[in-house]
Structures are given as C-alpha cells and as structure tokens.
Length: 363
Image (cartoon, rainbow, N blue to C red; front, side):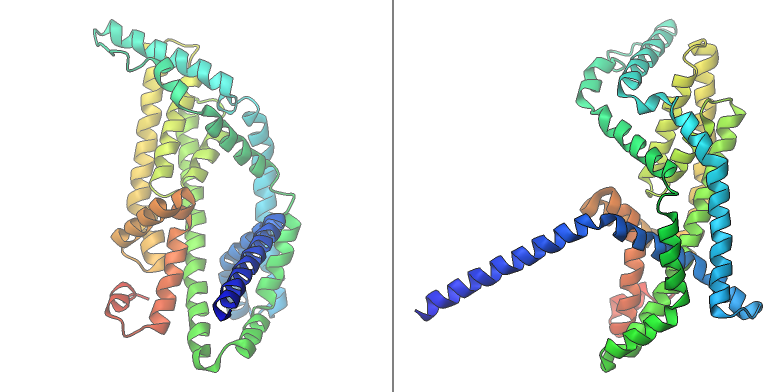
C-alpha cells in the first residue's frame, strides 16, 4: 500500500511540475514582446552605463540628471539614424528582388544561364553543375525570403517599442543602486560578496563587449556601403545594412553576407553584358567584401572579443563553435556573453580550480 501511495504521489507530483512548467512557458510566450523589451533595455543600459558614470565622475552630474542626459543623447542618436535610414530602407526594400521568392528563382536561373554561356565561350565544361533546376528544388527559398522580410519589418517598425525600451532603461540605470540594495537583502550572507562582485564584473565586461559590437557593426556597414556605392550597386543602403547585421553571427554571418552581396550584385546588373559588366562588377564587390572582412577579422574582432571580454581568440572561436553545434545560430550569437558570465561566476565561486584559474587569469 505504501508503495502504491508513493508511486501515485510521484505521478501527481510529476504531472503538477509539468503543468506548472507548461503554464510558465505559455506565460513567457504570451509576454514575449515584454521580455524582448527587457532584454533590449538591459543591453542598452549596459551600453549607456559608461556614459552615465563619465557624466557623474567628470562633470559632477547628479545620478538622475546623468541618466536623463545619457538617454536623451541615445534617443537623439537613434532618432537621427531612423530619420536618415528607415525611409530609405523601406523604399529600397520594396524593390529588392531577394524579398520575392518567384523573382529570386527567376534571377538565379538567368544568372546560371549567363554564367554557363560564359564558360562555354571560354571552352570550359560545367557538366551540369550550373543547372539550377537540380538544386533549386532542394532549397526552400521561402526560408531566406521570410527571414529577410522579417528583418526588414523589424527595422522599419523599430520605433514602435522605443518608448517602452527607453522607459525601462531609465529605471535600470537610475535605480541600479536600489536594485543592488534589494539584492543584498535577499542574498545569502555567505555568498553576498561573491555574487555582487560577479554582477559588477559582468556588468563591466558586457558593457565593453556590446559597445565594441555596435562599433564593429557601424564600421562594417560603412565599409560595405562604400564598396557598393563605388561600384554603383542598386539598393546599396539596404544591402549594406543587412550584410552588417549578418555580421552579428560569428564566422558564418560574414560568409552569408558575401554570398548575398554577390548574388544581389549579379541580379542588379542582369541588364548589361555578362562578360564585360556583370562579372567584373561582381568580382570587384567580392574582393571589396573580402578585404573588409579581413580587416574586421584581424583588427575589429580581436579588439572586441579578446580585449573586451578578456579571452584568447582561440578560446572565443571554440566557444562560438560549441555554441553553434549545440544551439545553432542563436547559440553562436549568445555564446560570448554567456561564456563571459560563466567565467566571472567561476572565478568568484571556484577560484582554486586550476582550469578556472587558467581561463580567467586575465579577468
């Protein structure tokens, strides 16, 4: 009887846990927009915090005034970017053939045909490798078009939640001390100092990381835009913007951006002669993107990834690789911040561990 009661109790408990978990997942799904606002506000507060501290330390601003001044500067910057680029992005994206599945299929077939003719003229046998009918059927182009459409929709609608994000960010920055005081009241005394030190170090490291990441994206956008404008590529702003955003995905993102730029360059020059116009322009754009990414890989990324989060480039590469294998593209994007958090926690709570000492010696 006791065994039956134990089993029944275990089943009821398991069902209850599953029910609570399911309800929590449903709740988080329903408030996903709010969670997104919180995450963006948290990242924005990490980026803005150094500015707030500078105003307080150097210009002797009061905390609230420093926060308000910082947010006004950020808001003016964001509004300026939106005013300059969003109308242009919307107008260009409406003409971007990549956003229409039927158009991209038609253009790929045309490009493949032109390239096959080019090879035949030079007595090079393609042996069916350039027959798009063989591999287009195996690729769901809707995945690409849906992705880029959603990306452009997000960019064009970014102002919708701007007020909410800045409102949350204001209190994250203004009441940071209050949050820490509240945390002290509920944290166990035995680990209070370790937890607070971890939060402080994580805040500093991630602030530097996200600031560096934004600088990298801006530099890549400018580089891509200059390359595309020099060679007279249509829809240069939207192509450069998408390619720069793709740079957020480590290693794979720049490769996708290059392929995208090459594809759109060829599509934009389909009306001209393939051998004397389309192909040379595409090669020039490819070389330009290649050079920009070499500079980024050897200058920008080492500074951001290595110096900002105090990790060796090989260490970062392995972390991103592991994150990609386990969680896919999302894993690659969040790998570096998550790994940085784990390193800080490990150093605070397990300082005697030799492995942790090795990977956290620069923190």
